Amino acid sequence: MHDYVNWLRHASPYINSHRERTFVVMLPGEGVEHPNFGNIIHDLVLLHSLGVRLVLVHGSRPQIEARLGARGLQPRFHRGLRITDGPTLECVIDAVGHLRIAIEARLSMDMAASPMQGARLRVSGGNFVTARPIGVVDGVDFHHTGEVRRIDRKGIGRLLDERSIVLLSSLGYSPTGEIFNLACEDVATRAAIDLAADKLVLYGEQPGLLGEDGRLIRELRPQQVPQHMRRLGSDYQAELLEAAADACRGGVRRSHIVSYAENGALLTELFTRDGGGTLVDQEQFELVREASIEDVGGLIELITPLEDQGILVRRSREVLEREITQFSVVERDGMIIACAALYPIADSDAGELACMAVNPEYRHGGRGDELLERIEGRARALGLKTLFVLTTRTAHWFQERGFVASGVERLPAARASFYNYQRNSKIFEKAL
Image (cartoon, rainbow, N blue to C red; front, side, top):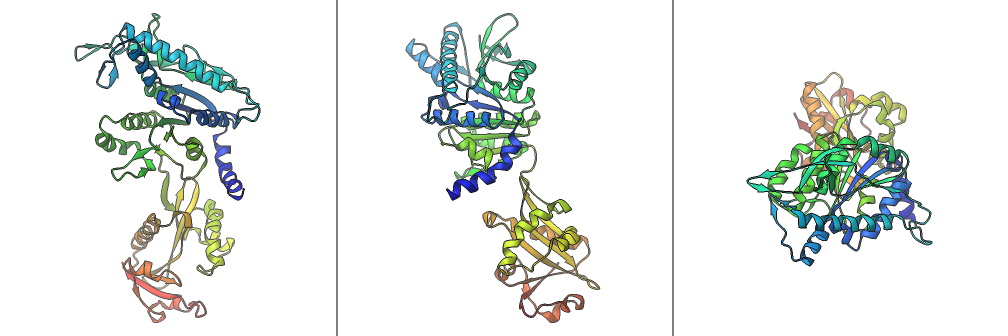
């Protein structure tokens, strides 16, 4: 119960920030077939109940393959795109129609003791996607395979205003009445861009983008994506990554890649500070910067536990407000997770590194090194030649980074006169 209460409290800022925001969610056909599909539906219903304006785009690749196989038809691809001739188009229409009905049915559930009890959702769809043919490429006629030409932004917007969930498929229509088979990633990306969505969420089999070492990559800038695309080659993760980056380049602030196989992956990604998938973000998710007066509350929350343990010298709010320009901070998604201060010492060419703290949940991630580098850069810019630090618990950490043992006699007079012999801090210095 305690963990649940803490989770809910930490989720509340995200609940508030997501309300009335527009999210486009892409769920491939593999995700609809997966045993976790029911939980995904419950998570989408929860988003809707929290005030999120929701557009759901579904794919249908495995369902199309099954229908082709049942009719004895051989699937054909060129450059990773399905060639949709007449018989294949019939299979596509059949698969998309069945999937749409199945998804609408799941979103219409209102059973007692179900997570959807009382939801009373309205699901809307229609001819919101205008498409055009890809045509002939490398001498290959793609027939009814198309690409998105336009999204009916106003029509979808009106339905979202009426609190409907808008359901889009991988079918698009031309002004001449033709039907085209589209890539669901293309539909989702264009919908997110044209609707000026706040988020694009892309479901895939993996938890997110995995690095060469197999570890999850938590965050990327769009400009970092090409190097991973080259590494991934034709892997489906590359398609998701490309869609996420394209959306961000088109004005969508954040794109998320999460797993359809993991129960609660969407909620973990959207309602926890570290998430559970891969974020492609226009802006830096975590940055080192100089502190401002608005950071005082966050600094107090960060350093108070260390002050209570006697690790840091206690500073009142008034002192922090007065000395805020001395601080550099690491901010992660609006939260101050680390800080350090630089105090030039009067009548000398030395400075003191003080009040260095890192949130326990974010230690061992190199934040201390980032802050130290920032403080040293600031000190050099001020023309300081020596950096002192006084510490009671972290002597080895500073020694490993070039600081050498020193003493009170080495401190400039203006600082030595305030040395607290009762704390008995160890003194270290580093030549800049």
